[in-house]
Length: 203
Image (cartoon, rainbow, N blue to C red):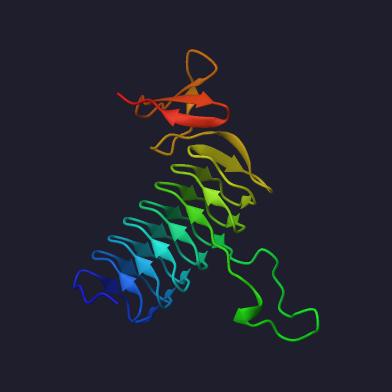
């Protein structure tokens, strides 16, 4: 665990000495960060949140209160995990084997959720591993994600489906001058849609 004085870990948090915590990060009341977890700089782990063994997290991530980030999840820089979000790690969960014996760590292979740069996962949503949430995508509150989400997509519902596009500011994009042009009303950035994918215009 980092000895950097700029890391803030409150007394009631349970942080493994084998976890790596980047400078400027804060871990709040009753949160648990397991062994081998690697958090980047300026991350915030909210009250009661759980970060599993070996989870990888980039810089400037926010994991809000009571979110559960199970291993082997991988979060890129600037990922937002809302309150009570669950990132699962067992595709076919069972407490026991078919013969009635209790499942052990050797009886299943954990699979993770991958979240790319800048994406946001809304409150109480669930991402069922293995899925990838593309860069700058937004998962609406309460959604259940069971398949990959493309970059810049806005998805909602159970199961989650794309209902629009969002820009890097997080604001839904509006239609431009033709069907494949989308514009951010906040920044003016323009995006091009081709075959169900969105690409930001480069200057």
